[in-house]
Length: 190
Image (cartoon, rainbow, N blue to C red; front, side, top):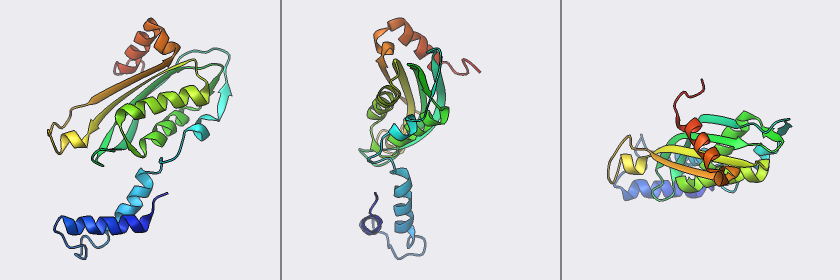
């Protein structure tokens, strides 16, 4: 849970530290706005996807389930700047599937905290394996990092791609290749 009062005081100190006046008309409400924003963008701290992935439906066949282009936003834990992009998930169920919105909620749960893209990719895959008891999963994240786009090397538009595979997807090279192609080819199905 976010301590709003500490955030407000911290933001006031930052405003002063950069040489601005926290009492200036345009800045006077900024500390409260930032505290409210932090409540929203960091609501995943200490959360897991168990709640989202516990509502399941029984299926007869364990056919591949794919959900692509799940938009996500997260905060780089190194600079506290946003990174954002698309998550693509494919999993092989073991008799049970989650509602499709639950996969998007899973992505959000782990994205809404200070994060590394590499860890985020793994956490999503691990959650699907753990809470759905899937036979296998592949997760691909494509993201632009503002810490690379607006500062430092200043390379806007560059994308970082991370991939994780678990279970039979990790073990079966052909299956892993098939899922990778399905997840990365634009408009491959629709």
